Length: 256
Image (cartoon, rainbow, N blue to C red; front, side, top):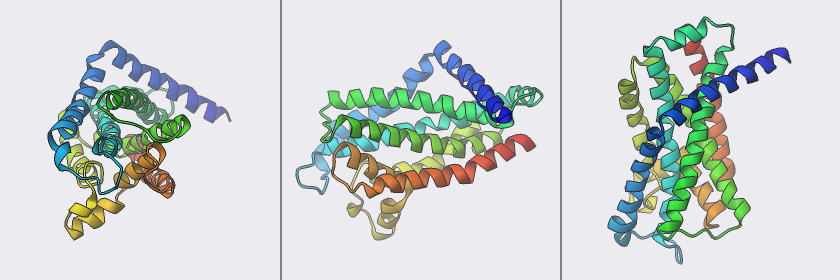
């Protein structure tokens, strides 16, 4: 119990430290919104008129926005890799390892802080979605559930990028290493277009990969247009990602 108390205490110290950096550098939050906003306007007003959702009565903007929300949460996870790589490059991680604190708290604090920031960004993107014509078709509680599902998935991805950040030398390398992972997740998915329009081999991946399952889960909660089974599928994917990559990231931190 005492070890658990110390773990929670140390983790919250690291969360506070990382969030304080965000408060002192608010431009980091601003630039986190720029890219998803560009995608919203591009797909909503440039490509939207040429894309069919394949579902009667479902407008493209309603189909699009859950995908944008997931893209925002997923790309936000890159900051975990960049932040840890920069801390490692500056020697901060070595200093933290020399202190009488939990090793897991260093990574857990980073992940929780980045998850908090992603939650704020996703909520802002939801408001932007309403401004461009997005409508939810379920209850307020289910919409909150959709936000929670995205946040959980984004938090799970943070552990993948934590491992990457600890394995490279600086933030630029971390960002470059993260994109090849995110590209097939976000663009070869059902986030922007129905997989039915894709070649057969790509369609198989786009319908089954974790981001697509989560997008369909969010659509079921916010639009009621998908089966709620995808909500459980997304949670299982998130659990599997954390169970696979969190121990690897912690071990990497201890051995680095």
